[in-house]
Length: 262
Image (cartoon, rainbow, N blue to C red; front, side, top):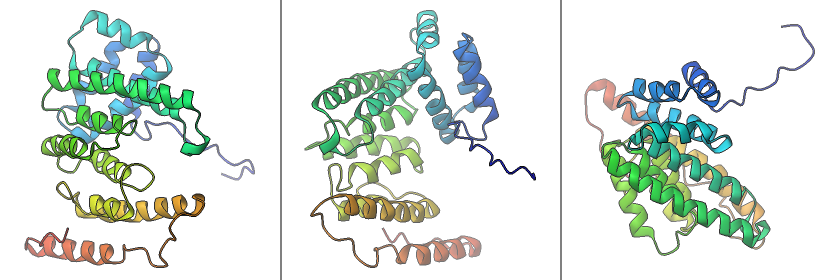
């Protein structure tokens, strides 16, 4: 406690999920059954399942051998299919990088597109093997970042499938505001509309506030880094969100059903 040396931050993707950390490490060492059991234990808790799939998918992107062995043993396992899709999308993101389009090379874009197409195909297979799982649809949405221009209807359809299975799926709603932001395939107005529940059903009230505040900072950063870009308004249009969330919480405590403002 009195050490002058600052503690190193814990950047593990598994965060506080110690079971996920242990299963991932065992899978990397060759015990793929540990990864299988980890996902089975999540059951139909889609949020927990999604977080654990993200941890394992990232591990597959680093070292895919253990998933290859798992797939050879049970080729029609739906968890293998969604992990394959998730890892391919991770690789696509790494190929693209986090630089602006202007600073990304044609080779990086081509690899991003190639891997995203493979991820979409793997996600389609995962849907066929486990129609109840929303996670393949989220991966399908993510894959459209590679070539999403003119595909808004297809994206909204995939979003609809995801939230039909899990209405408050955080990853689906984050991907919606990402796709519809000005940096990718939408506009400032479309981005906020997606955060507030259009063109699909709204996220949970608290998540809606977080989404609007999050995209405010994202939009500000994008404006600041875009030469000649549109100016960011002095007051971001999020001031109504905290009021709405407080009103919604009071209504839930009193037993009333709040009217959806989105």
